[in-house]
Image 1 (cartoon, rainbow, N blue to C red):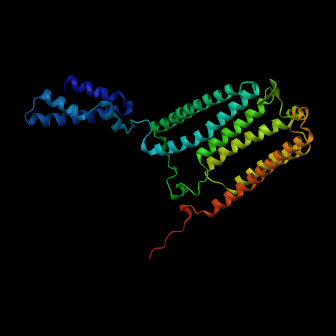
Image 2 (cartoon, rainbow, N blue to C red; image 1 turned 135 degrees about the horizontal axis):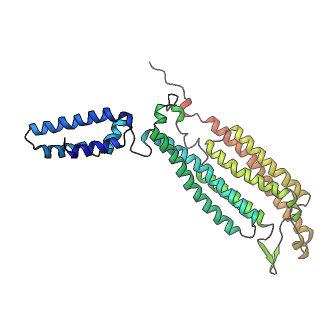
Length: 330
């Protein structure tokens, strides 16, 4: 064989483990020689026959990958669906948590800049998308390249139990989850803003809405509860459907918010009504403000308490495809 064949064999052997090179080199040279001789016997010149044979054999790196059963793709079809499902689930969990955590941290350190807090939260959420996508893809690429998944005898094969729920069964949507998390982050930002600023102004002076004494315990407690509610929304989405356990957790969170807030309202420990009293509106306006707020908190609390159990009961009545009895054969 000429230098052209030597160059081809050398290029192919470069990406083959050294322990396999001798056998593969003999096999490859024999295949090239046989193909070239077949063409020369048919009347082709040796030089032209060799060049056409090597052209048909194709890229030596691709040929070497076939010899060693090494994938030439980042994530192959065997692992792609696992990668895609895990990526979607991790993004649904990590991105909202990164957004909420950033808002809480920035507003706690600098409550005077809510716009900056939300901008930083958006930037961190986008960075979380990039980071999760990169590292998860890297892990799956390593698994694909090393063949660990294919060699794992305990790998769980697909079964009908992995089928997704019907739309009426999977009542927790990604859009609702994101909206819920953003809403809780917004309310957390408003509460933190009350520490140094205000949404209302009178004669150019900020109007304090909440009593300052609430910061001793109750407002940090409420902020922690709102954060827990945001985390619960993400966990609920990850589970895919309401269960009675999740409904019980939801009810507990609702009670932990509703009961203390109603008690605080009943004992006039929530609103700073100095502005109303100074404006001559008196006790009647203060009572209306407290009463309307208490009614709203009570209605929302009762709704949250029962809504989770209602959805859990509805989901339990739905029969997933995997649990349906098999049709008997005649």
